[in-house]
Image (cartoon, rainbow, N blue to C red):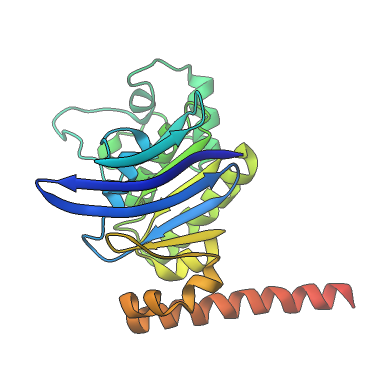
Length: 243
């Protein structure tokens, strides 16, 4: 089932065309990642999808009653105002301690209800933002560079968690990411944009597209090599299991 479909989308900001000729859809249960260089319109597109920004032309069709969960790039908290994890999860709607415990367990940070948000590590902070995004059991989870500032092991762990959440909630996931190797491993579909859609499809097909390679150069080839290694390794295990 299509949760969101976009057709003929153009976005003009301050007299400048930021996005044009955007067409795609997001279906239930799939992980879609949007990649592109800085200034390519990735975050603008996400804002249009959730209704925070109106397109200049074109249509955005959303499933009736669709629920979103959103994990931003970063969130600045006032360090002079102490706020516990549990209190943060209860804004703006109060939730019980049992509900908070269930969420924290789901995102892999059980037992930190009473910790101050300002005392959390970067990885813990992002998981709390993810927990809050899951409060309404979203049909579509949106992540805008949600792993920025994390180290490689933290990035890998975060995206493994996203895959588990997709499986358990049966939600769709739309990610904006500059981590090309993660895109190759974690996504069902990749959309590469640079003011317009340069190419889209499976990670393997996008990785060999000339438009993608022109945008990302040697980084793209490295991501493709890692993707091929991981998937060929998995296929070797499959063949061994079948023999």
